[in-house]
Amino acid sequence: MIKIKLSNPENVKCFGALIIAQNLLRDYSIDITSSNDYDYELVDMDQFMKKDLSLEQSIEYGINNLSKKTGDYFMVHGGGATDIVAAYEVLKESNAIALLKKSMLSQADYKIPTVLGKWFFGQGSTCDKGYHIPDDQYSRIQLLGYTVCHNWPHMQQLQPIKPKDIDVCAVWQTQHPPNDYNFEVETGQYYTNHRQGPWTELAKISERYKIVAEKLPPQTTHEVMGRSRIGISPYGQCEVCYRDLEIIQHGSLLIKPDMNKVITEPDFYKPWETYVPVKPDWSDLNEVVEKILENYDDYLYIIENARKKLVEMYAYENVCMYWYNRFANLTGVTKES
Image 1 (cartoon, rainbow, N blue to C red):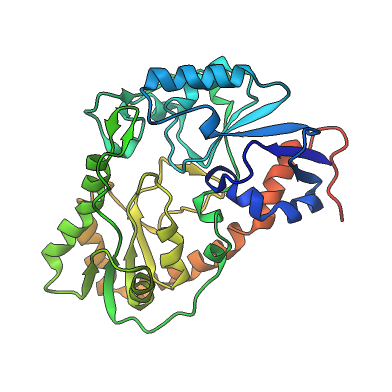
Image 2: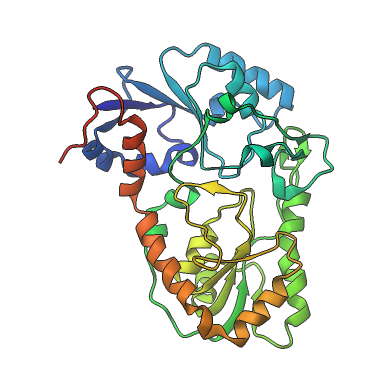
């Protein structure tokens, strides 16, 4: 039995799936413990980065904090985005086995400097970062085996498919709250610019189709999703969003900015299999929407396949198996029957 200590068992952002699956994990020879008798510690991101500081101050904080750690540990980056700013600098100077993330990029994509290392934010801030990561360090950046969509068990439950009387729904918050700074960069303008894009584009075809593009209360949001043929889901502060699965749960066709760069586990985002990709700048959105609505039945297979894959791939048993495989070569680790 491998014993894993969570540095903060209340940190759902970092440990949500493991907290939910902790009883199931015992069947895979993994025990989540709060004692100091453990094999590995999972260290939450609050212990190695502080986004309310400057980048330099955050890095210093993280290096100093982790230098006090004894025993074997992993750094857990609970944010859902692919960025590694402030975490990578600490990883290089630490004894961590690996930096574990919900999603990541290739070495080539990490080289390109972008705002706060978020590739879809573009460039132009006081903290545009890119990294030339050598092979030995890139091998230490690994996936967690779960995403933000594992934080809540209801995300894996399908809803009955209702009659569709709305063509397109684009229902979310667009205006990011002001004064949200990461390493002295206000993120709101980049977030808002991306999420306003589809509303601007859809307005151009709103006279020809029934489109709901606005922020709605939670219950109304789900009602509208259930009535929509197409559901659009932009990136948020990260590429993977709850809305992705919610649209699929309700039997709507998911359109989302291309996820080709984004590496996740589970590897769910397959173009024209589980979702329909559009360009991240939304320049082809209306063309894709109109093509689909003209021959909607031709795309029903994507909805069916996405619903099937959602249930199969997001099961917590898969999370457990992922972690079992991480430790499978260690002495004494056997899956209990």
